[in-house]
Length: 276
Image 1: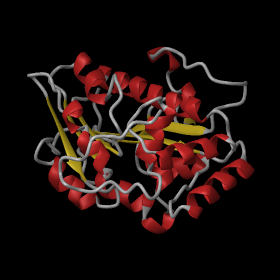
Image 2: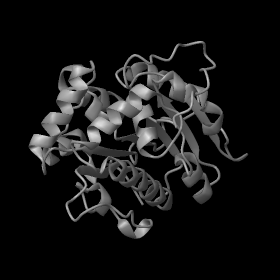
Image 3: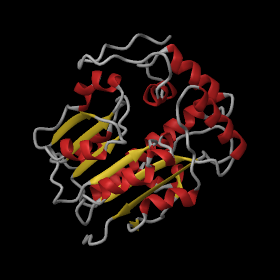
Image 4: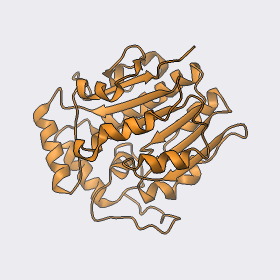
């Protein structure tokens, strides 16, 4: 049974008239911080692909593996845009377990995530975590606020996980990524995961129509379209891969239904000038 989430501390109201991706993602992961409208939409998506919960878990597992890889390669600063409702272990927990001095800034636009900001701010004494309330389509705002915690003269890992498929081309998806990346120091990384229609174009079109009917955007992108976000960067092996197949040795496998691929691409790439 979905329970009523806590009211946001900022005084911002939660719009319960239409579903929100962060709350739907929470429902798929078995969380309680969502509303009936979110659950209804999530269940409708399951009629298109019954593996919706598997997709969420696979994406979450990719985050864990990517942060372990980045930590092992010396990254100590992270900017996570499209954070979502906290689940454990979260990004800062993975990063600070490997390197307690790591500094993490989370960013999301849903007031319900702000209501859980305390869970995102439990930093080690040596490091720092901060949460900023901002929309991904406001890169200047994100950069200004993140700069109070992160040193943009040093490498930063920018992660946008399961986010950009909610930003249409007309809303400048590629531009918002490049505006942040161009402010990062050499040796920084870009980490993306993204839903695709490459394996089931008809199903992807149905899901997109469901979102559109509720005034929301779902823009699945092809493998090549995801790769375009990384223009000018150097891919970490294996490049763009299925989300579940990116360095599986760095985490426990996620059991999924059936034998078909979970329809998502993921990649990590670094800015030139990196010296390991």
